[in-house]
Image 1 (tube, rainbow, N blue to C red):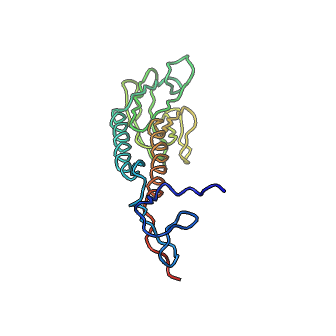
Image 2 (cartoon, helix red, strand yellow):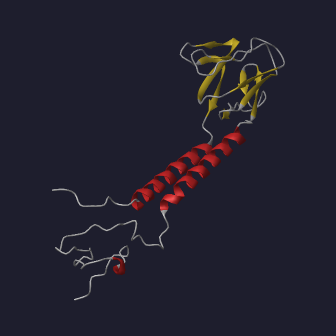
Image 3 (tube, rainbow, N blue to C red):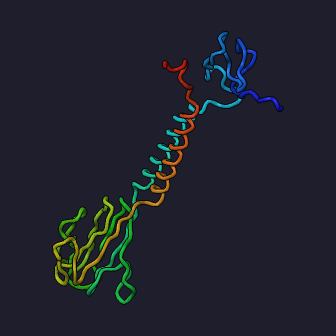
Length: 208
């Protein structure tokens, strides 16, 4: 019969009294005795609770760094002409902007008398008024799909959308922030499990 190995967390020279077949110490009446897990923890295994707060600080630093870099935002220029809105000029394919929170859209009048007016009932609202030249800018801070129109050749439908001469601004979450938050959630879950597994068990035996 092969001998039953003792657990690595128990040092035999630190225990008093006999051991059971499973390597658990017994008292003089052959009753199981609790072992101080913290005392007999393998010194070669690092204390995992020491990595919890450093991990949290690193994740917070990365998140604030991304937000600080994003706070500058980017600028998208939309051309206004008869009878549409587009990132491209007249005669080219019509493209609506896809931006992120903190970005700015600037409308530039190339032709005609038009306005850039947000449909009512949305989180982002703006209205340039009808004009025939110059530019108008709006900073977007909310995520979502925002409809707008020209007061001269478009119409607000009344449900947050528009028809006729109209356009769409799509604001999506920043990919880097989404990936970082997902990575942070995974790391936090792993660290939490490691900490829970490394916590000492309660001493003593339950009363019966």
